[in-house]
Image (cartoon, rainbow, N blue to C red; front, side):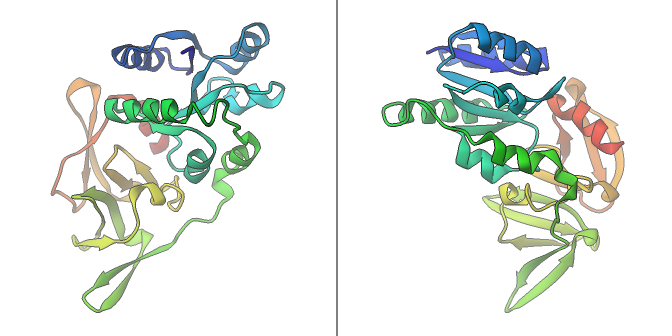
Length: 251
């Protein structure tokens, strides 16, 4: 299996390469920009599988394929969990949300191998995905959520929600009144429903409202701990790989 990683953050690319090596998969090439990738594809056979980051230092990675017919299967590696999640699922082997988890990586590779007999070359509609990514701030996002309380439905404005979190296979919202409510949404569905200016997924379990942040504290291994005004049932930790993106979001 010939494998290519396209990722502008070299430490992240090296980490993914090591994780794949643990699965006995050798990465043949690592590319770090749109321009470098275009040149490489123009002069090399296409690999069997590409691990593709969405946003590279010199543009969206989809630009690579504007003039190149892709002949490889793709697994997205992305911090763009807020946008186009459904498109990722429909148009790729899988997507991996950064920071990449070992088990999810293994599952994605397994999915690729299982599809090999019937889908030797995956056709990805980059234009459809790119339309959802180019102007994400122009989209309409949910302003209210509902939760069932006994026989009643309670309505919550997003302004009154401190965070969303997952626990025991359920998804909950936590309000400014320091109450938790079970909702029907999954964290994955919230990724296309929440305004990314207001909500950020700090890890696999939590979306937080920027207006609910009370304090940000340095934590071990270059991570950050988030304190909200009311929620204190669990620690909310920003993974090291997401710290830079989180700081950019704050600004």
